[in-house]
Length: 333
Image 1 (cartoon, one colour):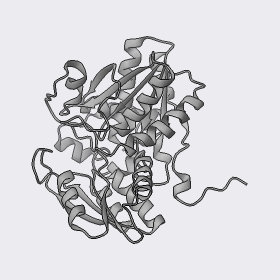
Image 2: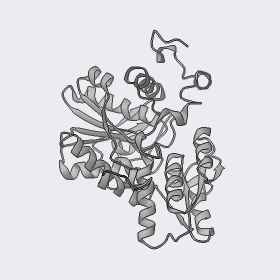
Image 3: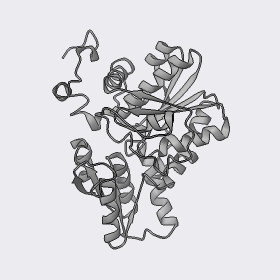
């Protein structure tokens, strides 16, 4: 009998999907780790599980305790699911710029949600710093601290990387992914480099993030902005420190949108904005490396969490990002 032990036992072991339209376009095998098929709907289920297990093992999270986190959404959703499964309370501090779908989901799951204005990390009222203060002031509470908690990247070193390695029989030429906390990118990249130092590990970055500049020059600087949520950063987190990065690729919002809509209408995959950055960067890398390579990225979450934005013609028009070319020629509106 192959029976999973509740929600927790269902996290991970996601399929690796060939992205047919992009593979045929580039002559490379472009593969996406289907993290949207985790039980909480995103790659962040892995980090949430490892962070809570780590707190339990260190004896800092006690029965009936509260897990507090500052998150753009998906980590909070994973934490809320796991807190429900394990009998903890969950309190989430979230920037008020994040999608309504995520906030509604968190509340539905029973988390206490505290939206705060979106301000830079250096500001003491940044959502991450607010969450740290709340955790310190709340009895029997722990701060998940996903950005600087190394249990995050350990989740991917111990699960995501080995799963991809097994699924590809070790035939990986490049790993490319965006970073928010850095856990997914860093943990997987560190695992791959331990298996084969020749695997190219490449950071995908939206406009407005400083990580592209950091990888290229060693200095953090940024320009522009992005509608994508939960990725990009203006600092090097503890999870990213020491992580291998052979190169970085920037993807603009129009490029990411074109990628997301192609995934939907040519590959049948309804994906979120981070996936547009990831797959868009994988395509750019494939064209740079040339045909015959195997490039792996991550399909972080589904488009359902962004439907009122990425898939709203009116919202995209307000952002001056709508183009009729996003839709197939035969599309019936």
